[in-house]
Length: 611
Image 1 (cartoon, rainbow, N blue to C red):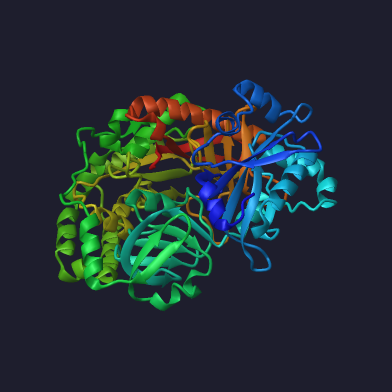
Image 2: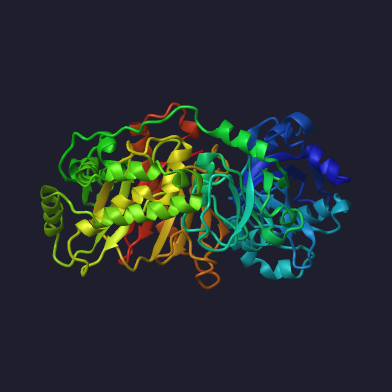
């Protein structure tokens, strides 16, 4: 029996589960579940992380793992035992305002029949009187959802409270996405306010782009693969979803003041801070020395991707080099096109004396001291870049690229710099990409827009914080045909981010052209883990379903999800051999993909995942 919450915490271990990070979990075992006299045990889950270790070392009932598995998992005909977990979702709030829910959960690929769920549920509820019925069975995987649906009448006629995944996570009021701490001024952002590295920001909606800030709070849920969380991970910025944060009684009194902000698995901490604390923190987390990114200007011509190698990233940018590699290993499932080297950007800037103009701009005291003024001057400078003329030889080369494509081809021009898509620094969302319409004339117009985005405010602030030399930063351009009317857009990571011990991939995907990384307001993507677990080939565990589709529909079919997994495995293996990481257990690739109008999978980007 577990007599109190304190007793539960004594037995619990922290665990990451799909949709719930660092929750408390107590493992349980029900022996003789096929009889009228079942016996329930709760395990000290820190001491015994596996059910078999508990049954062997604590109970002394089995010495053979094979015998234990045969009696416990995957077969309801011969099942003698029931092994599962009791998970505390402390930030769940039900429709009556009651906070906290304990869920009974089983191994995702274990098809536990109603008769066994009922016995286990009743034993556990009786053994935890302090929860006062605040407990539910959670069929967490597709296998268990199917069994629940098939036996729904039995569940409806029982005392078992059932919570589905989408309801469980839709009613969470707090999620700590990136643990950490920071100091800064607390601000609520509702529009296009200029932000700085000393701001801790409450966003009413997920922003499409974000400059470097000291802390992040959103009032609507995020996913781990949103651009703002990728940026938070990269910069060690505390990041959390807090429902109604701007009116929260522990937050609202500190608006427009300097604060200390801490995010952890259980909750957040906010308190007043002094100017001295903010200054000391800011200086402590910045690099001491300037950083000079590699910039190879020896390649002086536009090249087809077939002639761009992985090691050419210093001349074309990691994005272009990696897409060239993608097309090499997945010719039908990756864009094909051209790469414009850093040399073009550098020669263009020198031809128009734009480096001198940039230096004069940065030397202005108001530029250095006022984020608002700095943002305005950078906008003017981007306009100057877009209005400047190309050297004739450069204009001819870009025109030749445009003329080499089939008539009627709409082009996509994508940023590819020497300070993004790198190991430990992904630079997500810093720079801009553009589509060149058929009625826009010379393609050089759009190329200049991409070059100008090197001087986006958010990009400048990021480089400035990391002391990256602005004049060593360089912009290449990845060029390929544009894709329109996509069926879906998504992003995935080639590892099981919740439990790397088991092979798997974590995926966010949304229907249509709505990007997962920069979602439209109110858009909730499909979120799932596809994993290879004991007793199964590939099991899909849905965490959330898209709110852009009718209930019961998924963005990707199972076959599409399996095809994506296979292609992601190829990407992982290929780039692992290229990057040659020292520790492969904490290394993975992040990919952005789409399902085209014709239903073809297209992987449009690959970069190292920032752990």
